[in-house]
Image 1 (cartoon, rainbow, N blue to C red):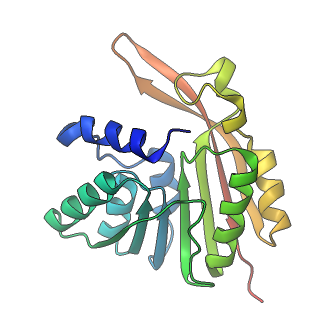
Image 2: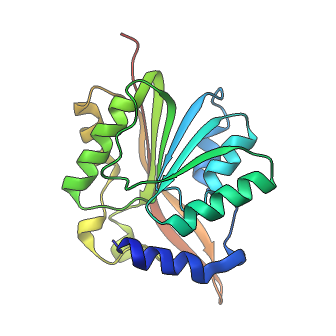
Length: 203
């Protein structure tokens, strides 16, 4: 996990070439949902947040890098897809209880103690029937896939995520490993990801 300054430098260096294509797993999981209030945690430049806004979601997006938030605000305004973008740390941020119909964690790789804290905060922020969607590099990617963190302490599995979310009172609907094709300079690489969906049941 890089610090805020390093992440900000990476974003600044990307300039306008940053890819604004939403994540294919996020698109597949969310296109069937009825739009409501969504929270995109650690949104980066906001490709997923802007895509959700374009589908009628009321989106709050947070990132700890101010350059990312500024770029997200500019692009969402340019495309007329309003996103409430704020500078905040994913681990420290506490969403309002019961506020969101969708909370997205996309490639937010953290050590287990911090991951547990984020998931607990997200569970509190879910409305009845709301869904937490977690997409990330799987632990298996370290040895068998392309890209992603090289630190095993930042990687996890769908089974572990399902266990943590279940312990928070959520119902896990999906927890599986998926393979993603990534074009490279020479050929196509395969990344090994996981996707987990968990919902807050009605009281």
